[in-house]
Image (cartoon, rainbow, N blue to C red; front, side, top):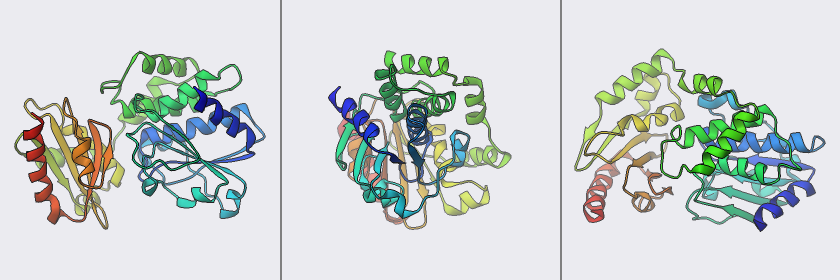
Length: 313
């Protein structure tokens, strides 16, 4: 692919590269960021490479973001991964870089960047980074640290290889990462580990599930998050606890943040990205996000969901 050659040439051109992800990063965001950093540092040891943005306790074993000053952006290359829209980019200083590269697998909405590689056929951005490495493996290097990061990203964004979009290529890339040192037992152990508070939170969440016309949902308030000592991301990661109930192929969490309500939407066999688009959101066809100004708007969203599912059938 021509775009991959252009990206590699830009990486070779710059001595300082700063890698951004999205707000409230998940495993795939971390996997893509730290995987790409490892590829660049392993292949070009003299380059300065930084990962910036918010931290994620859930996948903190993958790496820790760097804290850097504004002046480092001068003459640098900014690379943004796993982020469909510019408003979701964590640390808006990416614009201070001389050039910007966007690498993403979500449905394109906001085509920011000087070079853009967006491919919705990939189930995770970490797989895209793995594919990038494999394409140029004769001239690039990758350590076990980067392999672990990307494998973590693939595993988390595919629901451990269960979601639509997983392909033969997905397993090929995952197998390559295992060969390069990704320890699947270690990764699974880290991803499966939970505190007693997290365990109790799951019970609370399941007890609060509400059943509607063809879908199920639960509301997570700030008080819930504080009561169980959860981070926002840890709470949101439980969305698939609501999945798999016979007769209910659409489910979501409504999570209260300081100034808005975030909806985590998931479905099986139903494309819900267009519903998400109606509420300042987007994403994949069956895994998307949306926003409400407050819980007062939830009834309106529920009405839209009922109408959407009725017309979808």
